[in-house]
Image 1 (cartoon, one colour):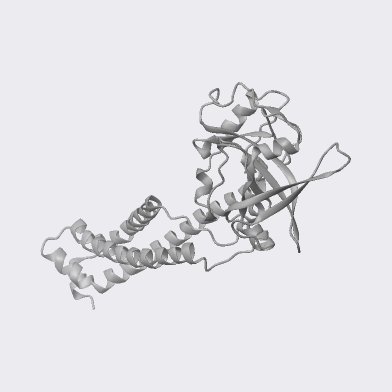
Image 2: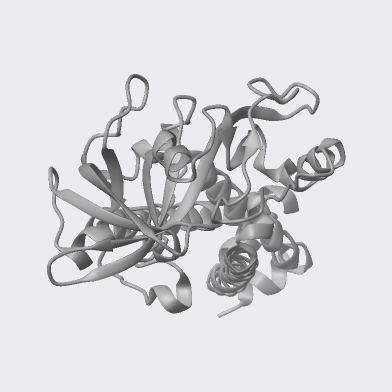
Length: 339
């Protein structure tokens, strides 16, 4: 279902539910239903999308974004528990345990409104204001009752994939086997602008890292040339006593590796320290209207750090092989006389 507000019900009695086995790469399937509403307080109001979820909802992705309280429990009888964002809680002065009155406009009912009272049991913050400003999560049975649906009718099915890089191809396969009265859309299509921004951000990361490695390589080449010029007499003496060109080159390359490793050590210490400071201190804030997030996001992965360090060391060392070749052209006699 492509609509944010679930208006046309879909029967849960589908061949692909509760197990989606006809397409490889599907990890989980769950039911949802959404309805637009207005949260009203004594002094303010806010338009939201109330998203109803069922007992099969995957809360794993929400756990890391939970900042206060707990996740709602929809496994037993119907209750009034609701999960809201920190953004909405701050705007409407809500805290844990508060009652939240929400009004819904009924379709095909002379535009009458119905209200529901919810109890806030948890507050989340995903970092994406576009999402946080809209969605509150509650039991799907509330949406079914508001829409006067049957117990086996829902608004949409959500699928989780095992490999996000295969999202587009899996989405196409799901679309092909989806009944004609339904529509299948990926999260990339629904939030196209956000993912376009992320793709541009990824490209900028690669570009910036490439430029930094190139500059580091040029600096190391310059440093190696200076070392060779300063040690010209030593090179001549080593050659005169029988050292091979490659043996002399290795001395300078080992020295260059030492300099690179020292630079990487201090660079990692300062860089990772600043990243951790931003991750937990949130010092750099952003305009969510422009960047979609409220602060500069930080993702640290040890494998990426190790790979980046190893790649930098290898590329810099590779770039130093050519200037170190100058050593083979130095004459021992001229080098010993060099001042």
